Amino acid sequence: MIRSHTVTSLGADDAGESNLTYTWTVLVKPAGAGDPAFSVEGKEGDGSGTHAARTTTATFTALGNCANRGSPGSGRAKGSG
Image (cartoon, rainbow, N blue to C red; front, side, top):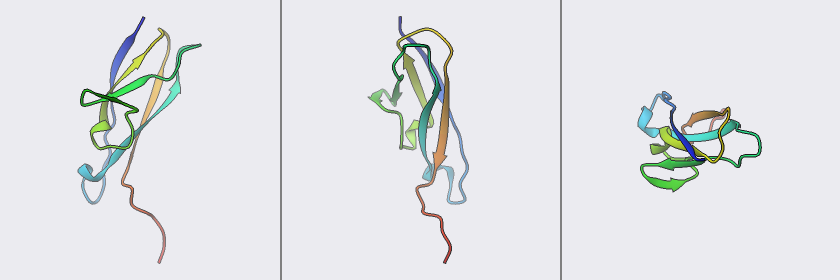
């Protein structure tokens, strides 16, 4: 049985939120299930690394407990100098 749910993450950035990309990580999934598929704007993909991925649908192939983490990032290198 396939189950889907919509997940959203929202971050902030000094250069503007539209500069962020979002990566999704599976923290918990049903026993024996594979990783969920993430869809972004109707396109199947891994749901990672784009601004559009801030809201995506996670589709699981098994019922049970699940947890996902959405992580925003700017892609800008941090350092001193």
